[in-house]
Image 1 (tube, rainbow, N blue to C red):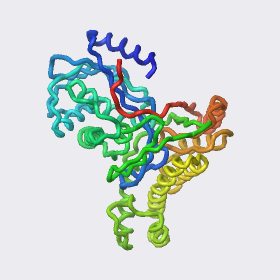
Image 2: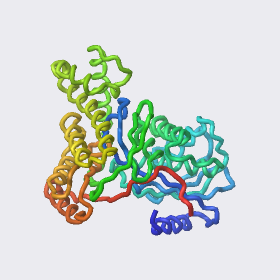
Image 3: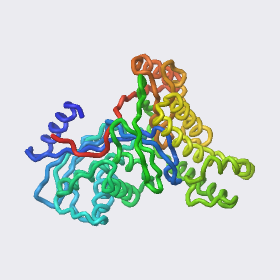
Image 4: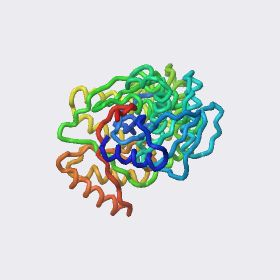
Length: 400
């Protein structure tokens, strides 16, 4: 965290609340997914990493049973939320605070002390970099820290338990039926590591990510990602129907994410004859799971060129088989891939707008960004934004 952000948080806090010597600062990163998109809700594999942008929560304990929270990003009022587990949804950012309070209580955590706090996120909203899950995880740590609980290590059983709590808050209170990918990645990320995770069992492994003279750039289309729920739910339904078809053909697995590429290759011609759309959806999901396994292996073998090929294959599959990209993501990926110094590019997140990632030459970044920007603006009339984030540790307390 830069000193500028630290200073900014203290200044904003002093405008809203009485100053104090008892500050504590909590942070949860956003996340990118290197490979493994739209596989989480089928019990498949993903390969996410934390990023150095995220959500900061600066708090001090108060003597009441009330949480007084002010969002720098949504500065309309101070939210006042009591510690009761009987919360009322109001369709604002405070629903995330209420949701995690409800789920922490359900998990048996004793919450009897409130805080005065400011919340600040530097993840662009609607970018597909998991700002909601970042907010949930930072609030959970702040609530627990103020109430005397130790902050668990990234990758520990206790942190995994908290990520599931955050997911339930979003599912049950906020009302978004997300999978576990975002919260798990944000809670358990490690610096300069990716996570290979199986989304139904939560088995996971870390691998260093060594890009040598390359770096990951995040490219924001500035086409706000509305998780077009009708399309998202449509894809989930198509995957469910596809899995039933595979079971009718003799597949004996508990989840679509368990179907191997070999099993799919034996059956895909039958599925294609029966239903072209379902064939394409399954072709992406099974192929994407296989790409995660090969991409993780590539990182362990320090094979960057193979990793780049798999990232590009993933992007092509998301465009043609799963159909979740759209004109703006297609335009920025095409602009990146046609630029010298870029070896891979694809959308990241749920799609339908938001961000793409690219692996690009470190020493030519300014030139590369300018060329991509010019191509994208010519195609869409919109100026993109670029972010160079470090691969970050997961949710944690920051010493101040």
